[in-house]
Amino acid sequence: MSIKNSEFELLLSYCHEISSLFTEGVVYIGGIAVYLHTINIQEIAYLAEFTHDADFYISISDMSDLRDIEEVTPNRRLSKHQLIKGGFEFDIYTERYSSLIVPFDQVKAYSERYDVVSVASLEHLLVLKLEAYRDRIKSSKGSKDAKDIFRISQIAAASKKKLRPDLIEGYISDSHIDLLRQLEKGSEPMALAKGNAQLAKNIRKVFSKQFEFLLK
Image (cartoon, rainbow, N blue to C red; front, side):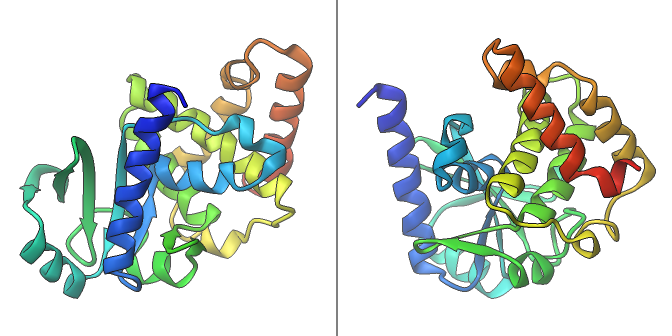
């Protein structure tokens, strides 16, 4: 096992530990959630990308309990808390107190589970990723957001899950749609395909088809 893989296995073990303690009140979002959706579909597992941190949404009551067992640091400017565990950084968004555009109860209601770890639905991940991408479009994290948006389309296609417009359209704006249109013509498919032009073409085609109801 490579150092990168062993590091990620350790991060996943911490995610499992937190989820085991708060089985109903923690839902993972962000890159870690996209990774878990991706790696669990053999057909597209090669698209999964290592991440060095993890983000989760937590209920108010469970946040109170988390504070009793872990040292969490507030980041009021970004309306979140941070937790360092085993050298890994966890960004924590609390029900009612975070600035995330999808409420906790909705993310929780439509979440999916891999083993004990709950992750946000593809629809809510798309909304949250579009918002994050808009805020950091010119950064390295923005580049990762863009690729994750493409990954979400690939996951939906490979899992034969029809994206539910009602879980998306109430949260996104015209600026989010404009970002999708820009991505449709961008270079991310070639990066994901590692230079394979035919594969990149297929990735772009799937993106256009899965998000057709938003791009029309």
